[in-house]
Image (cartoon, rainbow, N blue to C red):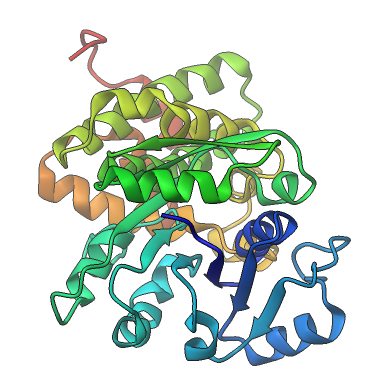
Length: 336
């Protein structure tokens, strides 16, 4: 299964970086966005000056605001639309898709209203029994570093192994290594929940706590992610891989992490509204905290870090009080 034309839906920093990666391989890419002003700027500048300045578009990138034009002839569609707008775009997209088009979600979030991952949203929006393999691309990958061709490794997961291998071959380059998996839900939960833990890590950094605190938070955060993922049918080993531990470490420690940045601002004393007003790009973890909190409650899964982040973001709890409560919980056995 060879893919020679791709529709990239979402022209933010990540969508642009993935489009650049493919176009530099000679793959034809249609880069779509619903923001008409943004599309006009991309067409005029042949560069994403808003999110990825300094990386001119190769000739094989076509920019469009027309969804049908974007997918015309594409054998693979990559969804890079923020989770809160994902359903609306896919609802428009589904009737246009040809059978057996590979659909890749490169979005790390969970829908608030339904508690569904992005592949779950797509399955729910499938109004006919059209065969469409649904997969996920995720892992420790800051968009800016991928655009700069810095060595990066990620995972792609489909239930169908041939589909996973086709997308693995599509994205693999000399600097972008892709591993295959069949654990779609495990990869999605890892990608969504790590953003919540990154907000907590940023809060701790903003409060002035040290590396001991960060290490404890990352480790216990991974335990929470694993509990939720396994409860939803994920494979435990996925959470020790690139999409689990790898992405968690990157997002909790990297200065390019939007979610850690939100936490830093909260820990330094800003309100959530003030913190978000200073952000240029979407921090998925803010909305994901709400959806994951509801999901954890429905599953009956204990997730104390998630709960405290939720209290800080949505109930105005003081950051220092949240950390204090985490450390004053009842003592227990580590592995349970």
